[in-house]
Length: 587
Image (cartoon, rainbow, N blue to C red; front, top):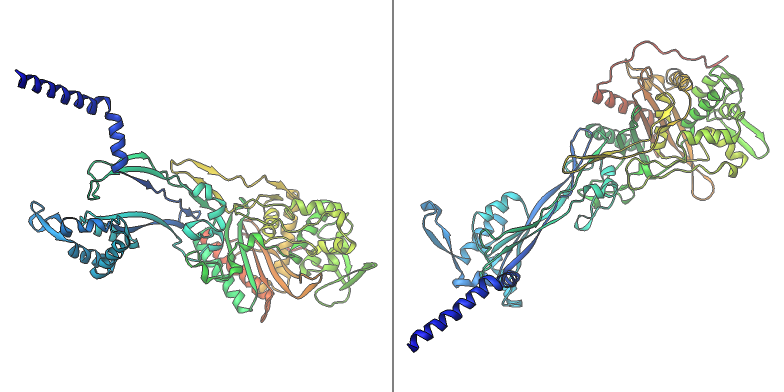
């Protein structure tokens, strides 16, 4: 009887304990056990791609993997572990030693078994209970899969991401690059970081005493959300051609720098923004530190004679002149005390029309006629054409250039601004001037980033600003005819010509500040042109800075012509119709 009571009491105790463990305290015990055996892991999100206007990848994220092992667990069971015998169809198992495993790992990672053994021994010397050591950092996916097929229980893997740029230096100045731990450093990588950055996820798994993950124990706490895709307006292949062209011309005349931009006249989209020596984001240290930024956006310069088109357009819009307005033009002028300027070449007084003044690029003629407009009116037209105004194309920094307030102009500055001196602009802003003239007088803000496409397919288009009417449609049409007169009647007409296509444009040769209150003795040479002149679709601007051995003007003209030819091929622009109708340049 006593024995029966003892059995019943023992059973009651066991039952009570069982209910407590499985029901009353189950949640707390499970949580406590999970905390002891659960292993948290971060699920890394992928940084989004940067693509060109056609979806060609310019920047992407390459997933790499670190190989790790548990030094202490390589010693379990005398360093042996069972593995399915593949030669017998996986039905039986074979015993694999740690030494064998080290050799197998090394065949894949490019290490010897002895090297891996040393990694283990060194870790255990420092800490006999060491549970972590790197075997190999940054292996690729095929190597990862090969290692996983070895089914080594104490071998683990961790993924990480590396930013790669498949096209090297192509558009490197625009895309930008990443630094330590892939932190964005410049370009679109910085300006569109919010779009490109994803949200990491998290998961946990449970492992046994030997460190082996328990099957079916993975719990995803939060899914990873990858970053969005940034769409640029540039065309990758055209960008490559533009960079080849500007590099070649800079080298041909030993210039300090060269820029070339190509813009869609109707949309303001920049389809190429090329600079000499563009950075290769895969190898930033190999590039000139002064050429790692997008200089087309952040390095303004005095544009010179390309801005005579603004003065001419202002005169026509205000009704103060026509293309046929006559002016007896000397080569040098001192219109008032302490004010002087002259033309780039000596000549007797010439009977030039306004069209002739633009064709001959006369500073004297431009300033003489332009001076009938007040400084306030001319300042207003400069701002309408985007000078001194911020651009918002999509880069992290975009310089406004320099247009000092009209009330701060001295008399020399008042004259100089009429032929593109005494102020500055980026080459992007200069392209905007000619875009407006080719677009019926409406300036469309420039753009380099179209927008961001999120992982769910939703697209956010960037706001680049509002269109601005600079001049009337009639004035713009008159200016197009005048600029076509320049290209067909000037000294460089044959050099610039593209058979079958009518062109319109203007040269520029500009002095630049020496940083000490004066001007350098060498120049920046530019050409800004529109094509086709009879149906304006694109504008290209080329600038060659301070050539040391050669003709910068010819280099700028050649750069423009080659850029226009490449653009015609890329976008299949049909030939012009009709013939030019130039204005008389003399009377």
